[in-house]
Length: 361
Image 1 (cartoon, rainbow, N blue to C red):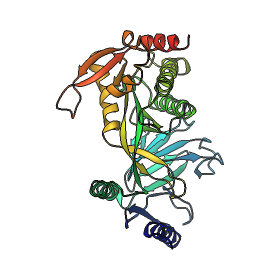
Image 2 (image 1 turned 30 degrees about the vertical axis):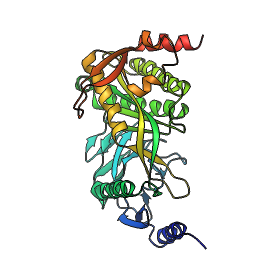
Image 3 (image 1 turned 180 degrees about the vertical axis):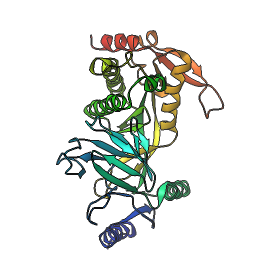
Image 4 (image 1 turned 180 degrees about the horizontal axis):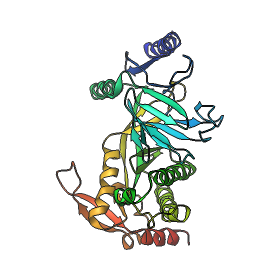
């Protein structure tokens, strides 16, 4: 005889077959149902829609590998990308396309948030973003999941689970000033190229998911053990160094006023992971304090005149290297949202390169 949990999962699959446009949140023995978001070609037949479920990101373009294939000669093969940052919250970036992308008549130069009814122009094709339930409904599901988890730690959640992660956040320094000096089309191509190459680097490094907000990018590595080993953190640091080297060379591809600089924050900790994938193949994205702290650490580098800020646990994973303290400086930084100063380990890209090189000897 099937247990109640198994029966519930079978029931969910049956509902999905009967109501494919519904998004189901499985919370213990309950189901919360909301209308799912989608993208459609304006003026096209009913079937020209992309349901934004089953993944965390969707590419748009002429390539047959795109999630949403559009036959438009003015559109690039990999033209743009839509990402779900957290349940119900979607962003879009242009991937350095030839003719660019616009949101509600304004050229997209960085990652921009999408709202229900937004009009998106890619090449000569107009797409409309629909999110009827919106972020509030999805946020309500998160709250319900948190309540359930606190009431019964043994509860198994299909949509949420706690995992140990390391989060890397990089942000472009002086972006606003650079944007003032550049033609909008040039800025869009340069930023699109930056986002596209960063995504490739992060995925090659074993990163579980990559996200883009404004002129910042985030990569997340999921760890299986109770604490990451030194090599796992070194992999994150090596990836950061590659990103920095590529970013510093961006002015050689585009006529930028000066080399582009980035700051970085890295934090390790537990996170509630939300599943935006199908039941059979879950695809998780992080939520909560561990992610927020990584962003706060990156912000702290601006005030400390350093390039990189590591959280305490991230640095402790490197403590097996006897000389790690020679390359990182311990400080207590004031982080937004924290009542007390937070232990932070700071360094520069030059010192990080030296530290990683010594580990290869």
